[in-house]
Image (cartoon, rainbow, N blue to C red; front, side, top):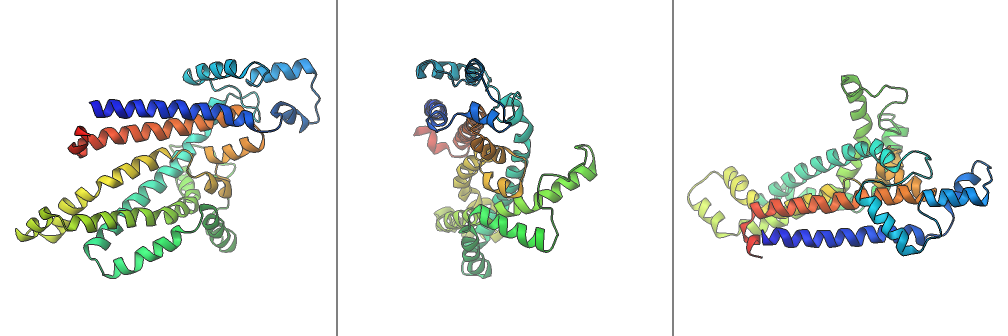
Length: 326
């Protein structure tokens, strides 16, 4: 229990520091988002109108500490304000309408990468020096050296524009009614998901495979593995029930961190494929100087990362009793 409470205190401190930076960074950026919002449409604001809008968006001339207190109260109550670029839509509605697509893309990519990467790492370490160990690690390291956006653009150009096998943009075909109970709509969503998800999987697969391989090599030399082999147990059972089971512990921590970054980790991929997720919306918010929307998205990402890591710490206590005495 003491370990969990210590970790909870750490995450609360990290959460406070994160939302404080979230408050400061947009206000240090140059430019006036209110004037910019109306200048695009050619409209002119009176001084009184501009002041009212700045108060609405929390960008008035009040002292910084007063703005900070109002910001903290609003964030803790779930009131993220009104989006500037999509005025008068509340920030919570903007994020709520798009976070589902980001979670879908990130979760599918993460699950495939974790399962396939760990499986390749287990096989490569258990049959060390074999074909899997000789071919896949260098190949995956090579693919992992490419940035997300470069591989995404290459896949989009070859398989989208060149061969025409996959769609170029969005999460489903334009004009199609979003009916999650329809098999045809689900198939269309999966069809649009193939290229962006494959991009993320290819870039992240090497890290999972190499991490598991290195841990498995270390685990294979433990006494209980030698004892299991001396008992004459099946090699497949030793590999999965003894070696892989204990080597999975570091992957649990990595999975928790990756789980939190699902919300914002696919930003560049979403931008390339115009995928309607939170990452794509964040880029639009930065270009439009939409401070409330930027703060809302950063707040959501921060909360997701910290909550996921805290849950993993709790699970880790159950998996590895040694941390209870830490």
